[in-house]
Image 1: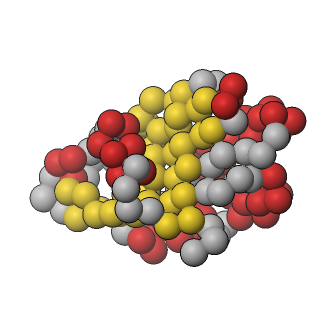
Image 2 (image 1 turned 30 degrees about the horizontal axis):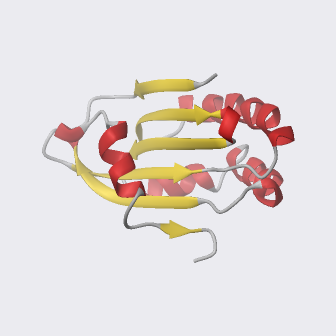
Length: 134
């Protein structure tokens, strides 16, 4: 599972404003790569029925223990509801001690900018970001 291309859910208003999220999830140990993929399958099932999801993608570099997710949501509330529900909530708790310094970047996009593109998202990764430490 080196990458999951953008998967679209619904057709957003091209002129509407939507919430975008890029997350960087580095693992501390190679021993956690396989469990990460196992957890990813569970989160993908949750995503399939998540209210307010417009689309998502995963970029995986297992040989360097680095993973990124990219998603778009109808609004921040839909994103928070997803994050705070199992299995995502349970998986975050289970993986937290095994993660290196994570980064989460949020911004607003127009519906016409979907699907989100990795090159544009990763440009944001190199600049403005927040980490789990603040």
